[in-house]
Structure formats: structure tokens, C-alpha cells
Image (cartoon, rainbow, N blue to C red; front, side, top):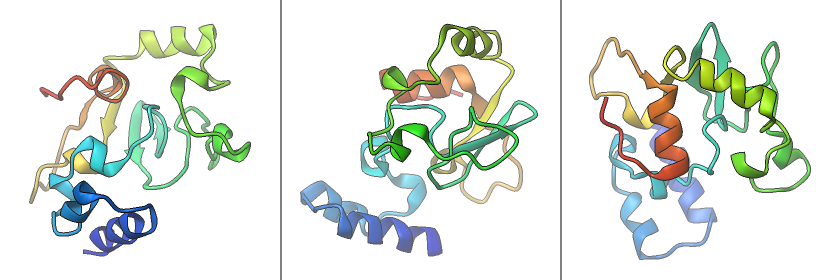
Length: 138
């Protein structure tokens, strides 16, 4: 319930349109990608360790490990975007590509309701969803 209140507060402070008003009464798990306003970066809002990306509900970058690393683009007042990120290097893309099926991602909006355990989804599915808008099929 606290999370829903945070989402509603965010919607209220970000300029409303008709679609925004509809999100105020929906549970978090029913909100669409556009309603959640996730930026076009699959690593934004997550922390990562041991091949697991956990939704941190914040401005954290999963590629910065070992400590809380805020999104570098936001720190210079840019909007987070994987395509424009300084961490989008050939070296990082190679590492990510090698681990697309090994890394599991746990975005809160996809956690099944009333689930005690959940296997998350592959990073490959998450990247396709965030970058290309491909629906999750896992």
C-alpha cells in the first residue's frame, strides 16, 4: 500500500493527463510500462550482485556495483537513457551480452500477486522490454 501511495504522489506531481488519473486507482502490479514511467535504460532503478538485479525503487544504476551508485546521467541532469549513457561502452556491452541469460531481473511490477517465491526474468527479456517494448513472455 505504501508503494501505491508513492506512485500516486509521483503521478500527482508529474503533470496529469487522463491516463495518469486512471493509474491512481490501479494496484502497482497492474500498471503498464508507460504508466510506471521507467526510463529507457534496463539498469536504472536496480542494484546487482551475484547475477541478480533487484528493483531498488530508486535512482540506482545496476552497472555500478560494490556501493550505491546513482545514475550518472541524472547526476549531470540528463534523463537516463541506455543509448546515451557513458557506461554503454563496447566492454560493458560485451559483458552484458555474455550474461543475458545468466542474470535474473526482479522488477516489482512483474512479481506475481501473492507469490512467496519468484524466479524473475532473464536480462535478455528485460532489455527487450525496456529498449524495444517487446512484451514479457516468461
